[in-house]
Amino acid sequence: MSKVFIAFQLNEETRPIIEAVLADNPHAVAVDSPAMVKIDAEGELVIKRESIEALIGRSFDLQELQINLITISGHLDEDDDEFRLSWPK
Amino acid sequence: MDMKASKKKLGLKEKYAHMTRGLGWETSYQPMDKVFPQATFEGIKIHDWDKWEDPFRLTMDAYWKYQAEKERKLYAVLDAFAQNNGHLGITDARYLNAVKLFLTGISPLEYVAHRGFAAAGRNFPGVGPRVACLMQSVDEVRHAQTQIHALSNYNKHYDGFHDFKHMLERVWYLSVPKSFFDDAFSAGPFEWMIAIGFSFEYVLTNLLFVPFMSGAAYNGDMATVTFGFSAQSDEARHMTLGLECIKFMLEQDPDNLPIVQKWIDKWAWRGIRVLTLVGMMMDYMLPKRVMSWKEAWEIYFEQNGGALFNDLAKYGIKVPECLTQCTEDKEHVSHQAWATFYQYGGAAAFHTWMPNDEEMDWLSAKYPNTFDKYYRARFTHWRDEAEKGNRFYTNTLPMLCQVCQIPMLFTEPGDPTKICYRESEYQGEKYHTCSDGCKHIFDDEPEKYIQAWLPVHQIYQGNCFPEGTDPTAEGFDPLAAVLDWYHFNNGKDNMDFEGSRDQANFAMWRGMATKNT
Image 1 (cartoon, helix red, strand yellow):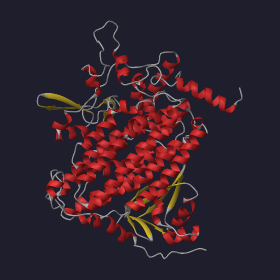
Image 2 (cartoon, one colour; image 1 turned 90 degrees about the vertical axis):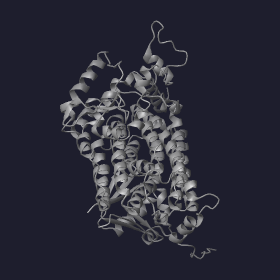
Image 3 (tube, rainbow over the protein chains, first blue to last red; image 1 turned 45 degrees about the horizontal axis):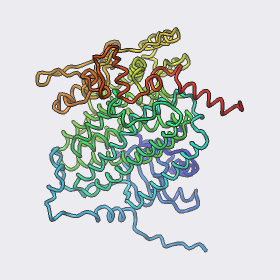
Image 4 (cartoon, rainbow over the protein chains, first blue to last red; image 1 turned 180 degrees about the horizontal axis):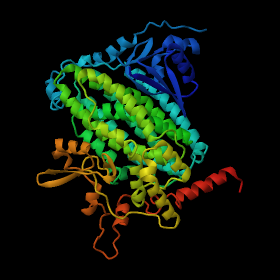
């Protein structure tokens, strides 16, 4: 299966996002580079609004991800609760 | 008191539907095909534009909100960078030359992309792509502006940053990226989307913005990394648009497949050729390196592009044939390009140099199959000669490829010691290309590429001297006249880094920043 990925700038806003993504996607691997982190995952990666909200203690709009997003790979499907990247099986 | 407003506004999907589809209408004063005259001539058949959906489901209100937030963050960093003499925090003044190439070769293309997406948005009859193209068009003008603003701070202190717009339309190596966008912009809206939206944004920009910008961070260039990542945060949306566009075309009609395949083959190769410049920036122009060009290629092209082509196989899309060549080329192109710029260092608006021993060891380790075998001896020889006062500059002009406009510097498949070129004939004239990939593109549309404005041909025709120049005057120096026409400050912007004004100023200012004398 192919890998999907998402990369974020490394800063205080993305720290809880990365933490939530890694907790929700145990098969994902974070690769650090200067100023950024790239998260690779076989097949699929899901980012959940609720998991981020639980860590930051406020409501979070998944579209806020855009601010610190660097790049993605895979087909995206975004709604109010989930931001999902996948290569269809 | 904390008032919690009731959350039940429109959901993302409903809002997207209202703010895209809800804004379209069928024209009645004029028939739709007259209002959208470019929608059909390329042969792409679309039956239902409503099948197009932006997976980000971004609407204009949200767009402005998040873009404004990005701008505030970016300009705060740029102010801090300027106020705190950030330019003295970079690793080494050699690094600046990568940024000069970026400003002159890439930032103006952001502006062309802005115009191109505005045109594509105008020319598509469907509301979904129109809205997405509008956002991308605004993104691209933002990228051009923020890059110019970020780099204008360097223009206060260093050579070569002063006239990028003038240079883009004239200088030999800048015609490479310029011709890429000219080629795309002079095609129809669907081909534009494959050229820029798909090949450039989806397949290739990761290689430019991700490892190179991370490299900028590694080299202490806070301004560049910040505009780079700010731009790249939009690229995620652009890539999605490119991928959505290609899926859409392939799902709408089986007759679209051969047209789309032809465009993918063409634009993958065109893009890969342009990226030669980025390979050279990563392997030679970043004093502190994050990863080699070859490694970046393997992650972002072979793995990521591979995943993409696996997915597109279900529509019948094949991996472009020219890509087998790339597996060999990834070990050579950065060295071949830097060798060329080193020799033509008298005619570039940035400085060149030969790597030191530690850097050559890094290159040997990263390129075990090629660097020592084909390049190290030549580079060491040039360096030894420069140390003896015989810095080599070539005074001839290179043959350029009629399609990608890169000098004939690439080698024959299977033989890295022999320059590769191909020849085609059209209406009794001979035309030369650098590779099978470019020859194939030329032969498919010769009537387009014979119109190419090739800088070397133009110089030989006498079209690249300042007005009033008399090339027959005694002691006429053609190179100096061309550089004058390019608006280069001859002796300051060009030549070796060693002995340059940038080198001396950076050392002096950094000294002043750390001492009280």
